[in-house]
Length: 221
Image (cartoon, rainbow, N blue to C red; front, top):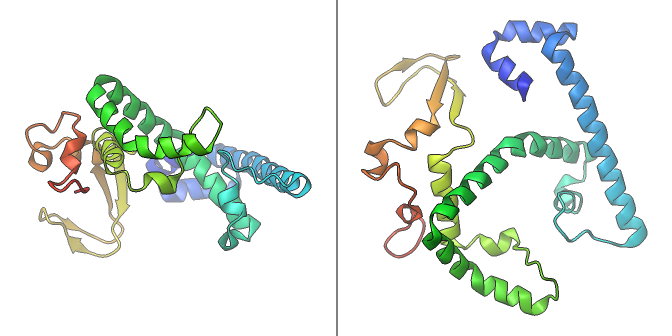
């Protein structure tokens, strides 16, 4: 993560030279990547061994089965790359988003009640078929929960885990604002500011209101 930031603020020629000479942050990145690869490979081998010897499919909360049981991920190198990407991408984004979700829920008991009502039918059916005290909601079961998604969208609007988006211009163009951009230019987009613009969201742009994402017929806008 540190090296990724370093590459954004340093000229490309500088960090590429450091990578070639294996010095500075680039050397640190190489060492860290070796440690990550070794950890993930050991985890994959342990999962395969346990499944083969015990027949346990690890049906609980586990990152491995969706990849290792999917024929599209038959290549171990591809699985390895995907899991390392998850480690990096989810390190700050998911934790930050969930923290803000629960913070806002603690301030909005009416929102909590609505989520509970939406989850209730699924929870009742799962509780009836399982003796376990813990109810785990699968992604397929929660995809259709409109209000729950509205809560997540509203959290991401006010508290985006990636507050600034960086884009590189592919070809010469003119932006909707009238600004001319040339191929190779870098554009920084403040997602945090856009999520709080009154012109886009109305007078209550600073208020946490999941209902803004719902249309009159109850679907997501």
